[in-house]
Length: 281
Image (cartoon, rainbow, N blue to C red; front, top):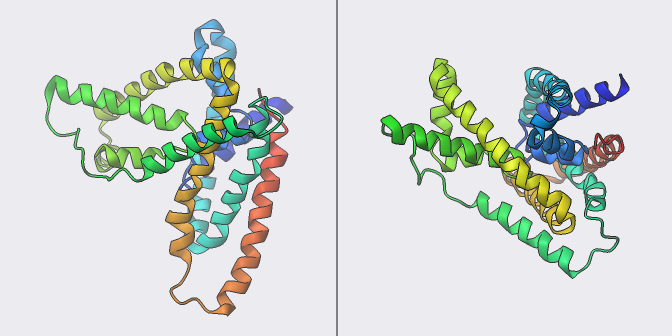
């Protein structure tokens, strides 16, 4: 029962935090110590259908409750107190790094660790600079149109599975964001179903090689993932923290705001450190 509640709690936190810019579901999953098991359950699903189905059901139930409940509260808090709330999630990201580095199976942070870390960092930050609106794969009709939707689903899956990569940004780059929102609003079952199946196919295609890399080459893989995770914080700064600072903010704004931001940063880090001890791997 304790393990079930912990799986659901982690799913709940992951689902509710996905509305925060720069905090992807993959990032939170890996910081909470449940990422490896999720990848393993998906990539080896047919080897233990019953066991993996039960685990994924518990996780998805918690995530669904989080998306449907706490996500709205977090969104409201981000609108009212963006500066402080963003530092809480920034602390959560930073607080999970020590536990994440343990998975590299390296005791010291050497030159090779730095190289792989920088590579992951550069990849995520570079993706953030890809201009949106240059591609339009939703126009047209017939076989080519739905073939491109399949490709989009695989790209979405890549963004969902890899920590630190923003799914919404990838949709904007592909020119799919507005179309997908319109399809959801119109309740276009055929379009949503096609994209959903394509994304599911993409998830199964990606998780197997990712699991192989994590097991066979843990040091370079996890160092790059750390780079992904830390690189994702640039979106937290760019999307919420910097815009929340008033133009010409007086000292009377900076002093209480910084004090509360430091407290929020510490609480976020302490929370993730506590939860990451209850690893589901």
